Image (cartoon, rainbow, N blue to C red; front, side, top):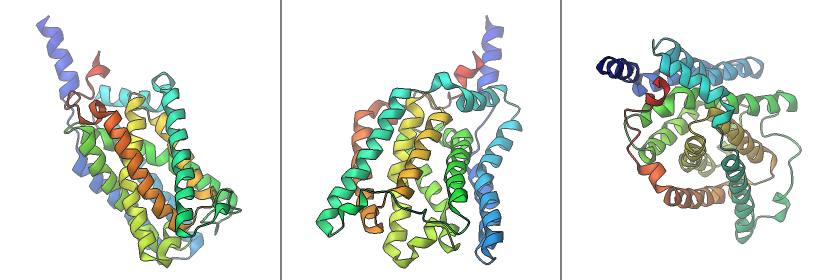
Length: 286
């Protein structure tokens, strides 16, 4: 009996998450491509942007494959391919909530002189320099790769040491700032916001409450990356194809914040429990 307990303890405690090292590597291997893209022609910068986008997923996968932890490797496989983990009702609910956020934001924007014409689809994406097909590919691949990178290793590496509320604050801030070089790269959505500094600030601020919502999606589906990919893709599509003005997206940030507060209050135990701390991989050793 003692031998079995020793084996189980070894499997669950030998791996130590390294969030600081992960973020340093993810930032370095992203920005080493994105910073040069600021100064190079668009046909070259597009390739560098894609390489930077892939970087967090690559870093995450390398961290896991080099961990020598069978539990951590199995955890990644289950999070990506474990359809059984997905709480489909919650995924549909989260998509519905975001659709209501968009609709509510547009209606509220009418008070500030915006138009009902925002309840329509845009003809183009905000970044069409390489074609609409490439834009569709970009938002799809961004949803997949970002979630594999950030949910594959990053969020658990923070959450292993604190409750999910503070994890969401820290992750949201770091994830938001990760996008910083994009505001200087011609053809990106972030660069299109440079017409007004407040639009840029709103983009970075909005990522923090949104981080709470996607953490909720993640945890409600037993830490499923697939659930997050579906939600992230829907959010990206709505942000790109619904004809909201930049002013309305500032209103949207307030609505997202309100929705976040409601979700955190409704799921208080999820965000503030500490039972998972230091034990995220335990169930993988069973």
